[in-house]
Length: 406
Image 1 (tube, rainbow, N blue to C red):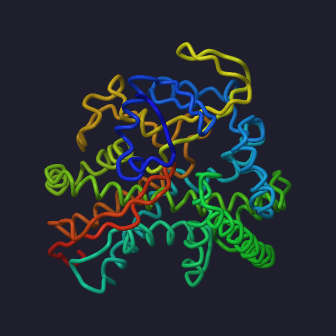
Image 2: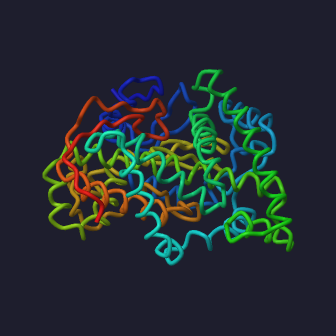
Image 3: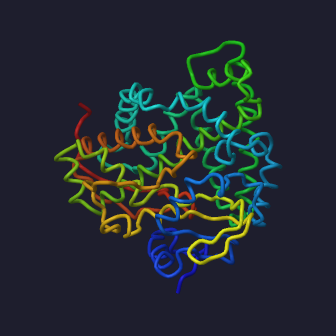
């Protein structure tokens, strides 16, 4: 029988059986416990994500008491919490904020820094305490994206460890009131600490601009391009959290898929030109962002269900990406899959701004791992994180013979 319980232990290790039941029996499902509509079919997700008129990203328009509680929590979390980000705004506010940041994440800019991403990946593997044994999450998937996004923003290397801790704490709030109070309180502390940190960095850039994204955003603000100081803070934190949490999860989950499907791993080693397609398949097969929400702005009917203004619709991207009406044999991991129009990065005006950077980092990570560790095998049990919204591994031990960096 179709149901969704955010405390269901299956959502931690393998949520796809739950999604399958919902998709087949109740594709537009009302969750009493979460007070949201859950959409699990690809076509419905696609339609909602592309229609910013009938489906808003502005959380303050929601009648859901849990969303309202989260808004109250954010308002009490200092300037970072109380200021809307691109994720929670509609045009025209969304448009002006996104325009200022887009230039830093174009495919052309990302390709320019790709060689440096490769250098970082090789250095991280060179630093392994025991060559041939690593925790893919701890030793590569966590540090690689946080180093890259910190360098793009202009954060000094000595502060990158604190950045990762702050980022993880804030990302933990995505499950909102379903998280223990201690986690929410820690996120609030981290939110205030990171705001203080960025205020100092912003002041430094005003006095002495550098060749980094933070200086560019400060300059744009001072030229009257509509970024207030609070908006600047919120944008920096959004880039930090979105720029490393999801990429970490993509690398970890992608490696887990390769370990579970050694025939697919060997295909990539025999033909590295398949790695870009493989990363797209990793995003489809077990994407890091499992869900995103929208708020209905008008009454409407969807698959026979009456949806009222203010009600929250949860687009279950992980379910949409396994919809057999869109993907042939959707539960099969296939690095040569063609026409892979997954929704892992969303769709429409809120399509993930950092997608080109995340894809480049994942491609480099797997190029490096499969070259340096040619016969990877599990060296312990993987450990999945607790969030049912941001899906990712906390630990993935691997062993292999080693090849030196070329």
